[in-house]
Amino acid sequence: MKNDMRKWWLVLGLAFVTASAAFAEEPLSYEQKIDQLYGEVHGTGLLMDVFVPKGKANGLAIVDVASGSYYSDRGKIRDHMRGQFYQIFCAHGYTVFAVRPGSRTRYTVNEMEQHIRLAIRYVKEHAPDYKIDPDRLGITGASAGAHLATLATVTPENGEPDAKNPLQRHNTRVKAAVVFFPPTDFLDWGGKAANLNIVGDLIFLGGVKGHSEEEIKEGAKAISPVYLAKEAANVPFLFIHGDADPVVPLQQSQKMVEAIKSAGGSAELIVKKGGGHAWLTMNEEVKTMADWFDQHLAETKKAQAQTEK
Image (cartoon, rainbow, N blue to C red; front, side):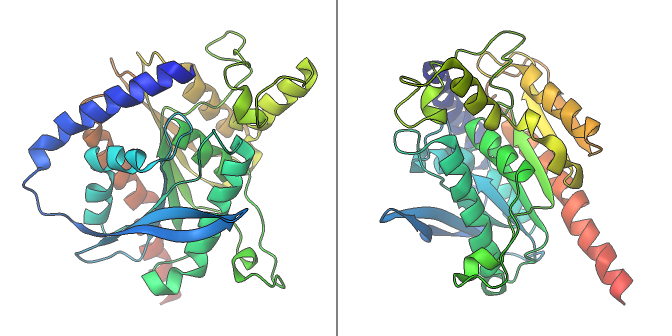
């Protein structure tokens, strides 16, 4: 799966180059702040880019988990730029925090998830600086980034009011999530047993060698959002997935939608007919994502403001 994901993210990059050509002369809707430090792990800085709307801001923000094949180099942010993520979101007035949670060469999925939580806390702590509502955050991602975004959403942590570190005083809850083709179940991969040797370094640093079959399966289950959907009952989800995806089966989104609904939550699935693991016109779905966030974040905020009056 790892090599296939690398191949298809290369295809995605080329697709985004083609799809974005039509937008080349369109003025940018954002100002980009590069490599903002949001945390530190073992002396290594964790970075994000911040995209601030040039036009009228809506006072809301979206956390974009920039990871592909569980690598988070700057190329992943460039892929999302080519897909018009930031252009479209900022045109709607959103401030976007493109979070790089680290790569599989150094971190497990659980560690990357902790980095995303740290980023969410950072955004909430600095909400006054960006003039955003810390209690109405959206989250998004594609492929590996979608998996990590989904996992962080269904496993939120509470804040500690008396914590010395001000970041730890904030919880990690978000209000809405939209994701592209996420892995959600590492025990059931398209109706077959997943090859846990391939994803072993996502579970254990260094891979599965030296771990029992039971430990490996327990680890795989622990990073599979489909088994952790209870908390998702409080967060509306939108999944977008191609029915011809050769890397992450459509079944992965379908199962997650079922799990969320079974937990009493709200989940929608848009199936892209003929869509693979990325497609040339993904900017069209990004527009749908922005409209969906408007419905679940911006309109809700307006309703709250009217109620307060």
